[in-house]
Image (cartoon, rainbow, N blue to C red; front, side):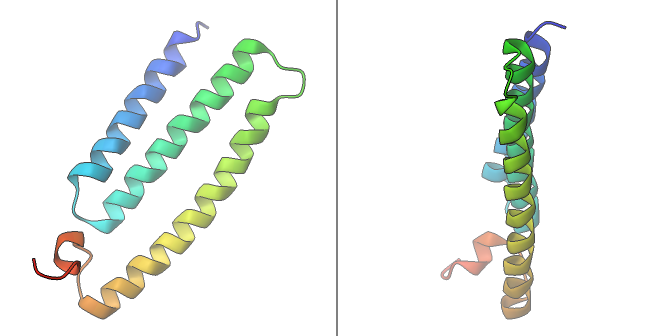
Length: 100
C-alpha cells in the first residue's frame, strides 16, 4: 500500500479535528476534535513506522504512548467539563468566560 493513502486520511482527520476545535462552542465537541487530531497523529506514526520498517517499531511504541495520553486527557477533560457544567449550567465556552 502506498504511503499516500494513510497520509491523506490522517490529513483529513486532522482537518476535521481542527475545525471541531476552532468552530465549535461546545466543550465536549472541542474535546472530540482534539481526540480526532491525536488519532491523526497516531495514524501518521504507524504509517511511517510501516513505511520505514524500523526494527525497533518506534512509531508503534509512540502510538501506544499517545493513546495512553489521550485516555488520560479525555478522563481529565470530561471531569473538568462536568465540574464546569455543575458550576454554570452550560458547556458553551463563550458563555463561561465572563462578559459574553
